[in-house]
Image (cartoon, rainbow, N blue to C red; front, side):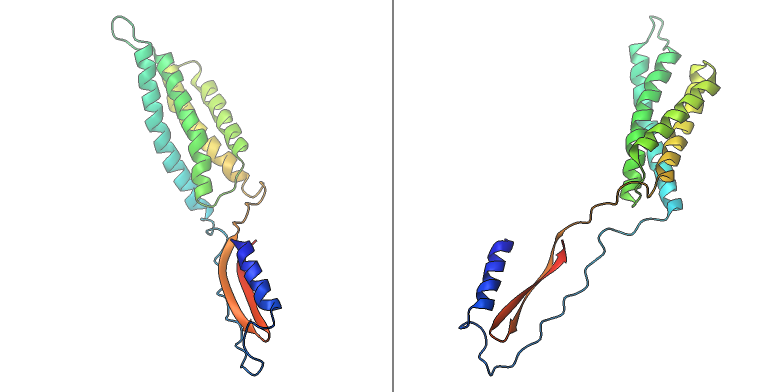
Length: 193
């Protein structure tokens, strides 16, 4: 689309027979409005951390409960009892995968630019600490490891804010104006390139 506009601009600029007469008044080019910012302003860190904890925690608990339920179904004994270790393993696995996805997504949506792999590393450290503190008790592992995984993921993401490469600015034409000048016209294009 830019090529036809440029050819029209070149045609209007080069052609001596097109444009206003030599004695016609010259109209100054119209002012182009300032461009909007490249991306929305970043949310304050405290608000971003609170949203990451609440959203990722809620999503993790919900999906972790579904994973624990399927773990219970897979490990039911003939008398109807579930294996606590299978429920804990399935619940923590689905909880952890959800946290690993939602913390960086929520942070990025609010203008954060932390590193994904450090968030995962923090989550893994939280899991290791929680399993160590639970000392082999499956029920305690769920209650101790889950919050530590969430805290580790959020801390890892937020501590690396600003370490990654800068986000690419969006490119595109914001305004196009055709301004008459003596002997032709000028095409003005405003945008981010």
